[in-house]
Length: 496
View 1: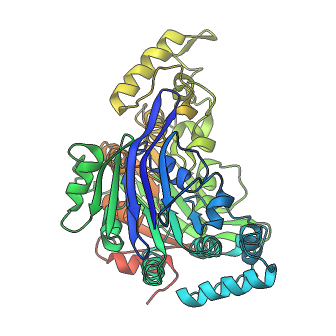
View 2 (view 1 turned 180 degrees about the horizontal axis):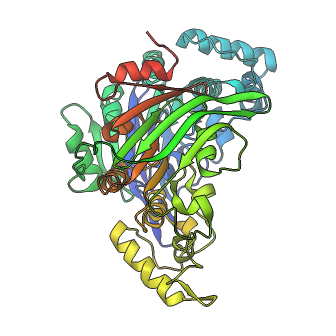
View 3 (view 1 turned 120 degrees about the horizontal axis):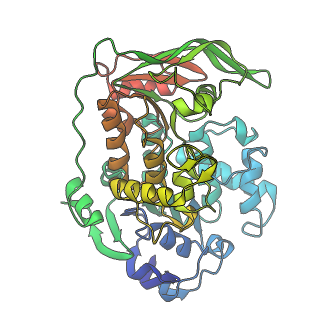
């Protein structure tokens, strides 16, 4: 169906892809995997017409083609669902579908688009409220809208970028059932993911990229997860750090009692109570959009209006604090580019965002830039942050290196309370292992860690206790003495 031959792409001196070749057959689900910066996104953007290749050939149904824009890709029957949804929240699901599917791709206007969307829903066994605004839909429903939107262009090839990143286990099963149905009807699927267990479950063939090269293309049969990981990183996979039992009677660093938050006449947190003790990782599971952001804002900003009581304490509370509560927290935000970094500033400036005005980085009102640079170099070496030099804008770093920089900054003064929100989203297997090991290391040193994470497997791997947030309410579980499936049901509001 589609074949790419010797595709290459450079950005300045950086080689993103080098002579990459692969084949996608109709009716197959193929995986594309690799570390951050391996070239996956560049390759998908070329196939969807967002980037032109520097060299190489793309064949579609045996004929050479030039995919010069997403509109051209859609006319060929190629659709793409991005990791971060591209829907307009204020418009209805149907209006979002029409935005793309109605621009000359399907003649006949709204009625034909609606009929096409209904046809795809019937084929996949879905029942979506297409007249509802997207802002009112759950995460899994929004993803289904994007899939239908992509399929309405023709449904010959569907590209999915990290499609399970925000889904509950039951939603993942539903998605896989839909993908198998699509493949059975002749649609080709490209499945981009860092989750090797899911790749081996749903895919038949795989292409592994490493630093711009396709180091393996072929059948998945006979390849173990360890073998795949070694091909991806070119060596051994980092092992999880040991995690001794949490201390008995550790001090409560965060305590919420009956906290309720309203937004625009809607209650987004309902009487939430929670304690996080020193030497403990407490995980909050849940499908996104169920009150997690309100919980984060409450903890990070005590000025937000909320009913109930919240206490954040450390052994350093009695020390003078110039920045108040923020100085007591280490925050690893969900959106590192918007909330954790200033992309236009240098690596050094971003490393010192929290303490540039404090000794030893400043004295008598004067900034000590030599101290800034030596501190940054030490942290870069310790956290294996890779960049050309200290003056490089942080926005030019890969996602994994940006996340490591946030960790290096937030954990540099041995914080006693850490708030981490989806800290591994979009990271490869190596960067994910590094981030989670740093949280466990901090926990072992006595820090209290609140981990809010949409990836249930990663959450359960490190958490001492787990609670589930659904529609603004927090339900405690008996983890580790309960099953993953039971927690997954709670994430969807199913209690039995």
